[in-house]
Figure 1 (tube, helix red, strand yellow):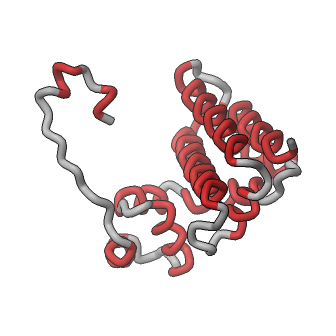
Figure 2: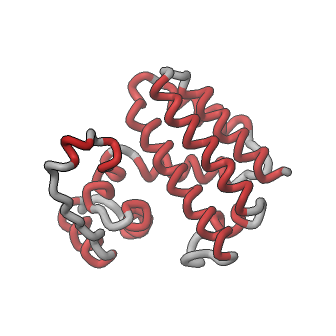
Amino acid sequence: NPGRLLPTIRSRCRKLPVSALNDANVTTLLGRYATMIPDHDKKTLIDLAQGSIGKALDLAAGGGLDVYDELNAVLGELPQLDAVKLHKLGDKLARKENEASFRMACELLQFSLSKVIRCAATNQSEDNSNPLISRLSGLATLDRWLEVWEKVSHLIDRSDAANLDRKQVTLNIFHALAKTVTH
């Protein structure tokens, strides 16, 4: 993130753009370094990793697929919120030993929101393989999705800066999403 560097440091740096790996390369590398992952999970990891084998391996090792499934279970209920699922997720992410899971959940949620926004902007699913994304994009207008993206991103940033309760952050994020799709 070059904009975060001081100008005096940035002026002494060289930019080295590196493109993302294609799906075939990520598949090959997952086969080499993550042999225990079932094939159906590899497809999800490849989608979530966006061309980064390191990110795919981090997600696999850190329980990212389970977190992603739990997020999708709660998102799938929208515009309603299943209080039991939501509080269970909030309790899990709030545990002191689950800080990495909370970070992963925030990243995965922002990833899903970005796909919803892309789908809403183009009026079509980007890959037609995720019916949840297509359904969610149709529940609100693009400007409402962009507005909730800003709220969610701000809340996630504030959770670090102000050391906010992670369960409350999780609940607030999903209530903001529910409010977005009900108006």
